[in-house]
Image (cartoon, rainbow, N blue to C red; front, side, top):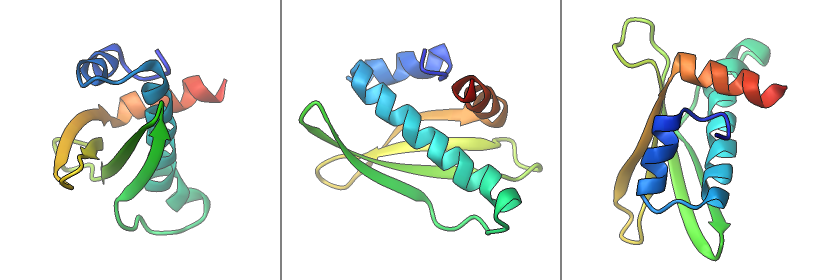
Length: 110
């Protein structure tokens, strides 16, 4: 669904995400993937700070932050997504591995 793995969608739905929330989250994940993993090869830029985005979906503000792990020697290579609540406390939403992200990128490009 939306190019995101089923387990990730189920985890997001358990967090109270609607279909519209997941659509916006997918856009954020794809932007994060491009900036963290593809842009350094296309534009030569180095990965900078974490990507953040605030969006309003169905009248509710979502504030996400992506943490990219792009190191072949780490156990976890991919992106972790956090959402900040009204107290500015991060809540872990989901993680996608590099193969998951590549699959999602290819699926959304078709």
